[in-house]
Image (cartoon, rainbow, N blue to C red; front, top):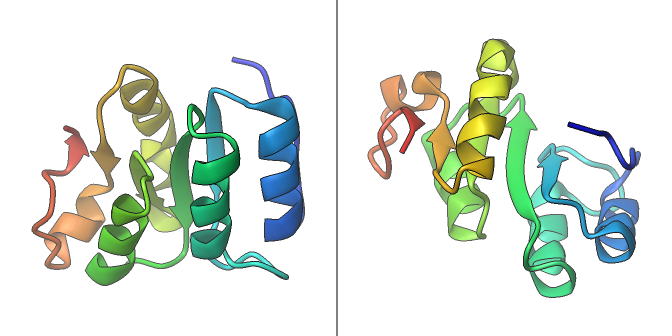
Length: 115
């Protein structure tokens, strides 16, 4: 694994995604300038082959479902950051990953862990 870029806001994330076309993008919902959901919508257009994993404080089932509906392949709650490597592995292997915490909170869209 190699980190090819780091950004500090959503607009920069879209720009870097278009330029670098990484295999995987980690996004937070609470990005300045352009939130993670809006950035994900734009990234899907400019770098459709890049897989998106959200790593965020937001632990609601609705937020996780919205992220997955936007095309994200993974959703990891920061309080379960230990899930991140498993999420990255699952997503790069073509599976979805949702932190178990989300499922325990009432998320019924997908099973916890790699799907």
